[in-house]
Length: 172
Image (cartoon, rainbow, N blue to C red; front, side, top):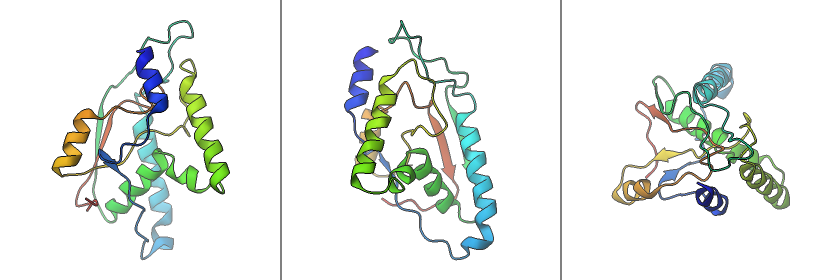
């Protein structure tokens, strides 16, 4: 377990297994903004529900964090589900935080803070902590990469969550 934690600190985003494309601009953003923000809040609550604290005892870093609900699946339906799934993935994986960091050095500082927090196995997960998130692409290379996929933040990030956007056209 300790070896896996160290490997996780060195890991980078696995773009072969997951993909996060920039959200497409909305045609009527002002009209749907409140509903979309409410939907994103509900998705964050769903993701955190049953995920546990993400922390291990200080003197037992090899102990896996307790999970109330190890796996959870949700289905999105309705208008603009592709945009909602993409926006949620970008929020969840920290892409939005990185874009808002304010430049290259600020982005690097953010990444270092995330890695520092990941190294603290005794630290409870915070709502702003990034999770590995993105689309599962339906092609042979992506499926093979998914078989080898290891989350970068196995102890700090939440347990697996599957979000299916009905009718969403993901790239790849």
